[in-house]
Structures are given as C-alpha cells and as structure tokens.
Length: 250
Image 1 (cartoon, rainbow, N blue to C red):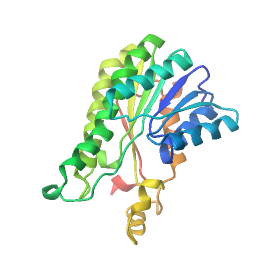
Image 2: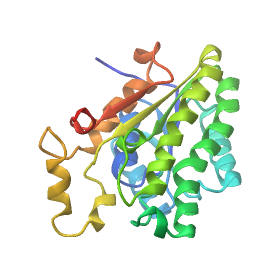
Image 3: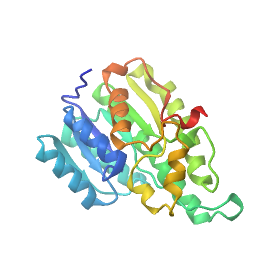
Image 4: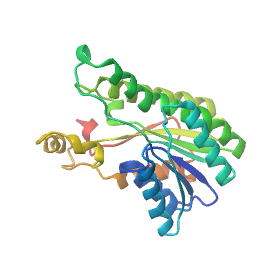
C-alpha cells in the first residue's frame, strides 16, 4: 500500500529522536515537506539534514511547545514555507518524575501537564485554523498505553495521556465535517531515549509485560502514524489506536 504526501506540509513536534524522528523521516520519504521541531535544535537539525541527504524536504525548528506563542510561530513557519499546513503530529512528550501521588512534586506535575497535554492543545489551537484555510488536513496526537490503563508512580504522565484522548475526540467531533481528521495513537514501551534512564532490570521487566515478547520500534509507530494521516484513512477520525504488542489485551 503506497502512501504519498506530495504537496503536503507537516509539522512534527519532538522529532529530534525516537518516535518523532521516525515519523518525520517516514513522512519525508513519502513526499511531505516536514518541519522538524525539537526543544533541542541540534537534534532537530541532525534529523532534517539526514532527511535532506536522502532527497527529502525538511527544515529544523527549535522552540518550547509548552509556550503557546512559540507554537503559534511554528505553525506560521510551516505555513510560510509550504504554502499551508496540512499535517500535524503532536509527538513531544516527557516522562516526568517517578513518585506516588501523595509525594508527587508540584513542579514536576505542572511540567508534565504543560508538555504532554497543554502543548497538544496549543498545537491544535493554532494548526486547525491554518488547516481550514488550506482546505483540510489530518492530526495525530501521540498518546500512550497509559491513556487507557494506569501506571504506579506516573500520575502526571497517566493523567495527561488520558486527557489527551478526550481532547482528540472533542476536536474530531468539531472538525471532521470540515475536512480535518483527528486521531490518537497509544504506543506501548518503545525503544527510545526515554527508556535510557531506567534502572538495571527494569527494561527486562517491561519486555515481559508485552505478550509479543519485546519492546516496540519507533518505525512501527511511525508506519501507523503515516497511515492515519493519509487519505487511506479517510473514514477514520476520533479514534485511539494501540501499538503495544498486546500490553492492553491482558
């Protein structure tokens, strides 16, 4: 099944590594112009340069997606570069502190909510008017398996991802008839830099929690993201798709 995004401009947040990098590279390989955003501009530049080296179209952008003015600027940059914005992947996210609710640091809570939830709202808030002007578009919000199940000592992350599903569904109801589809993806534990801080033995424990017997790969999430953004998924909106190796089936 060939997916093409010729004459489409995409904004991918948190695209300097992991899932976001795989999404940006996949979209560019399918013909999209990709604005590669990351808080770490050097990481975004590396990804954009690697895309360009293979013949794709990409530009790097920094900025803090928890700042609504910065997000507004990112959308404007994408529109000016590509004569419109057609695709948005709200991928930027952080894990946050590990602590039970009664001990969870307040600054940690606010930081996780700002990055994992508020930034997604800001992305849609500014991208949707641009997409309407461009004649329509598609949005994928990167949630998590923790959008449907709980996880001890991760209250902020779990709360943000649950709320993200509600935000996705509300936006889908509001804009699907206007030519903008909005969906969410729930990755299981994926081999990304986010897992690099795990203590010894934790990764092995996570592997056993996935019936498929391994962790996921970024490209496996990117492939579904491309499909949901494409015209092949023209009747899919307001939905939540797990890529979790059977984690939530247990």
